[in-house]
Image (cartoon, rainbow, N blue to C red; front, top):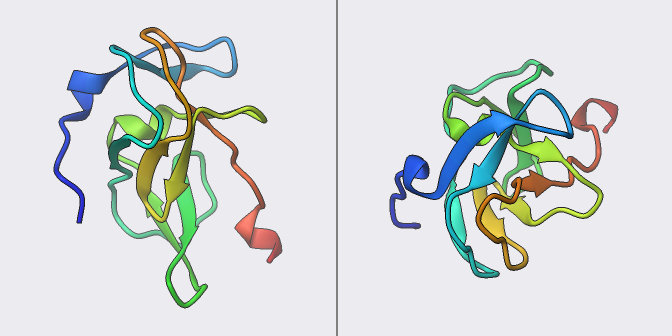
Length: 110
């Protein structure tokens, strides 16, 4: 289980050159760092802030994001990735850099 992290100590939300609003780092983040949990109620919808993940039995589950992590945008060259609903840095992230993940496959097509 990961230690609770106050997301506002690591991130801020601002206008993104990728799409709408984005999530940006306030400080340097090292590769492999735990960045937080995507929190929100369970969902069965495919919607803007719904994150789909697979559990240990490869079943799809989803959460409708209600915290700052909902502002993460897609990139083909991401700096972070979700393991379930936990977010980790995959490389050095400098201050002011937009936090991105590869959205990957669309679970509605599986």
